[in-house]
Length: 301
Image (cartoon, rainbow, N blue to C red; front, side, top):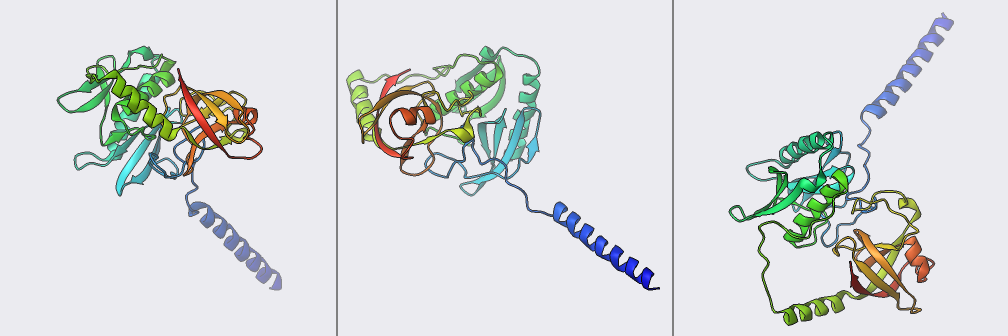
């Protein structure tokens, strides 16, 4: 009798433990995925042109695409990552849900990625009637870029954003050379002297600030430009300068300089203007201090 009572107690205890284990497994909080958006797989803060702080796990996963839901200015939004690189953010509209629109593009990108397409046939054009940008493969429209479908790491210039999204897709689909113009978009001609003066004024305004650096934790991972991050290369992250731009960076504490190439987006901490690779930071004495006041000069591509 005592033996039976003991067995029942043991079975009851085991049942409780197993039940708690499965309950914890089944109803545990959702674990956050990598913070959004990935800029060399770094977590971004919600500053300036960054759309969201972080995402939970993707709401849908396809062969080459992941869809991440979040909120943007009190609107439901879904950001589409293609090959783990943020490509476009879709916002809810009265006519279409963000998820519906993002899912349609996800299916099309999956299909194209299995066809070994010529990425040079991915183009962007201006639609004067609808006042937005049409991203196409050959003559087929894949998606429109406008105020409701936007670049996740916006440059605050919709034409540049449309080009960046297109070039990002061209690179990821087949390493096609980047486009520099939008088909059908008229270029407004201005006086070259005025343009030069505006450029110098803006450059001087942003030419000094605080630089930080990043390295080991991101070595080998994808940057926002699509290439692999090499912490030993002389590269840097900037919020809006075109990828490939060469910049001469000078540490204002010691006068040492280095020329870096922009291949990532960042930094994403308020008050900082440049995020150097570990190699570049070491070259000008920023690595040991973590951050430093710097000046930079744009050299071109």
